[in-house]
Each structure stands twice: as structure tokens, then as C-alpha cells.
Length: 231
Image 1: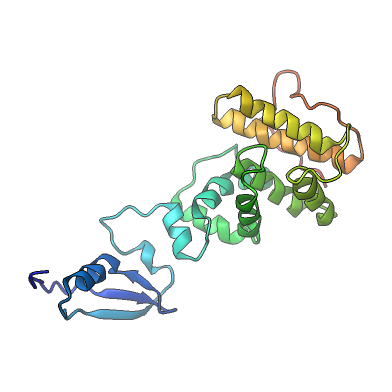
Image 2 (image 1 turned 90 degrees about the vertical axis):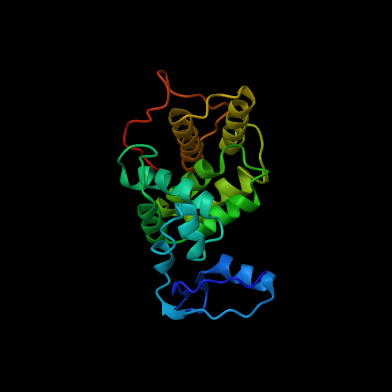
């Protein structure tokens, strides 16, 4: 505010869409000072350039996804590793770098739509958003009838439309809500079990079988085995 500005040749940067990707804090300081300041400006940088600027700040996967226009960066970053476990194998919730999260978010076309839908219904979900979104997305990718997948995961499991005794969605919902009330440890094994429980209920639904209660297999959910996703 006292007009003491030191020119450092560090530019204000805009990407190819005209979006400001570096220099936000400096520009806000100029606005607050009310003083004109001469700065170098660079335009037309790649949309991915923000990952390489401001090396003093640690950019997380959430940050990188938001820069690319994904609205639910944090939720996507949590969901991607589970989706890859279901569709690609490699172990539940394996460690992923920021760049890997960004890459796989792009590969899994439509995942952001599923996450957005789950986020809107987050208060109705019977389990963690990432587990739900991953199971829903993976099931839809493998489904012979995506409309049936939508019916189970949205109309029945979340909105509880048309459920009666013996409905797999009702048994699944009761089981998952029971886990939440029991306050089980929120570790990798329990999260994997949640996903497998969702798929077990969905499997019964696809086979047209009644399900009055959902229970884990003897010995627990097989979290270290290849996942069989119902088609």
C-alpha cells in the first residue's frame, strides 16, 4: 500500500483459454494497494502449465484436477484408486502420485459425472462417497444393461424407490448403515469391504435373487483377490 514494488521479471501467467494460472496473490495485492504496477504478462500457456509453476507451493491431485476444470477434485482423487482396483487390479487403494490421479481421471470417461451425482446425494448415501462412486462407476462400465445399474445404485440404494422385503438394495443399505453406526475402523480393509458389499448386493439384484440380509463371507471380504464385477 506504500507503493514499494520490486520488479522481479516473474510474470503473470494465463493459459490458452485466458485463465489466470499464476500471479493471483500478486494481483490481489495490487488491487488492495490501489497503485498501478508494471508487470510482465505471459499468455497462451498450456492448460497443464499450472502444475509446473509456483514451485514453492505443493500442488496436490485435488489442486491439479480443479485447475483442469473438475469440480470435485478431492472426491475424484479418492475415487480413482478404487476404480483402478476394480477395473485394473493391482491391489486396493494402491498409492498414486498426483500425475497418476490426473491421468486416470482423464482415462475413466464419465467418472466425474458419477462423482458429481454421488456428491449431490451425499447425505443419502449409506457409505463413503468414494466407495459408492467407484462401485457404481465400475459396475456401469462392465454392465450389459447400464440402465439396470442406474436402477440399483440410484433409484433403489440411494432413493429407496419401490423397495420391499427381500430387495438386495434394501439389505445392502441396512448392512452399510449398520457398519457406519458401529463406527468400524476406517482403514483400507474396511473400505474395500464396503465396496465388495455394494457389489454383492448388486450381484443379487442382477441375478434377480432375493436378499434378506447381507453378511460378509466366512473369513471376511476377499479384499486381496481379483474382483468379479457383475455384468
